[in-house]
Image (cartoon, rainbow, N blue to C red; front, side, top):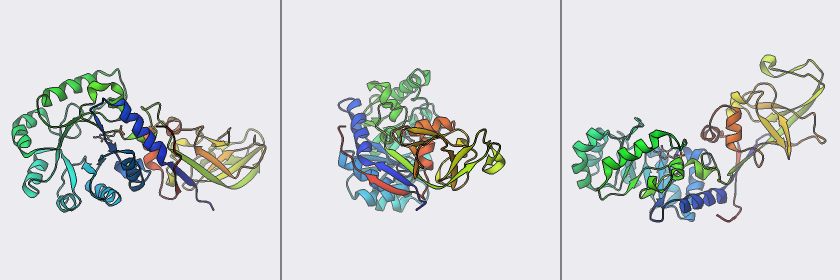
Length: 351
Ligand SMILES: *Cc1c(COP(=O)(O)O)cnc(C)c1O
């Protein structure tokens, strides 16, 4: 079978949630961000594992993602929607009991008119200039909104993965200026914000990437392994080239493994001639370009013909692979394609 296997360790994800939960201040609740199909790992399975671990508040990007999560979780846990209440979302929000994080006066009007009395939260812009009400808008409508009883007031940090960045303190100050004294739960921190320290935690944190084993959460348990089947082995002579564009030329007699998995499976083209795969403990360089369905790997130095090669595993995290492609672990994870066989493993461990 040429289909590669993506192993997803649900207990590692749960252990990461417990770790982040312990890092948060004692009276802070720890949520879980499972947008983009839980960063590509499967929102239903991940949501159930995290609910089992103790998570009660989940965040998704849009109402459609919320529907899938509600189906997996059943009634009870709160599912919040970062994009808020868009035109056309009203029935989904109502029927599935989603909590939109309202971003604008338009959304606030839409929600309070179409679903009066139904739960909502509010997002504030504290400097990232992406989502949420500006301070002037907030001042104008805060009294009305607080009257309607929001579940949460939240904002998002632009530079939390750089602890020394002055933007962090500036956004904290702005968030406090906009919300100190209100009697509504507050949330500012995602994974990076949790690591900045307790003054960033408020009532609820919203970790995403840290749950899945990515930076900036350095002590995270890795959660994914990706093992690719070798389709064919070939010996080539000095001067022969491999793959599209003849982008790699053998400088010595070489053995090349053609391996199942390409850019259609999320192995970014930028990995060409740069990534390393692993035969057990032995590194093997990816040579030539990444094709749509296959990559080519120099295995000349192996004692035994490999049947599979690992591209994510004990020797290579999502951030190692991201570094080889000049990107971030988030992009590696969310690109892992739909063609892999997904194997959910549960290996109980200490949190
Ligand atoms: C994606 C996202 C998060 C989670 O961020 P991580 O860096 O993955 O922890 C939290 N809050 C908002 C608003 C987001 O968009």
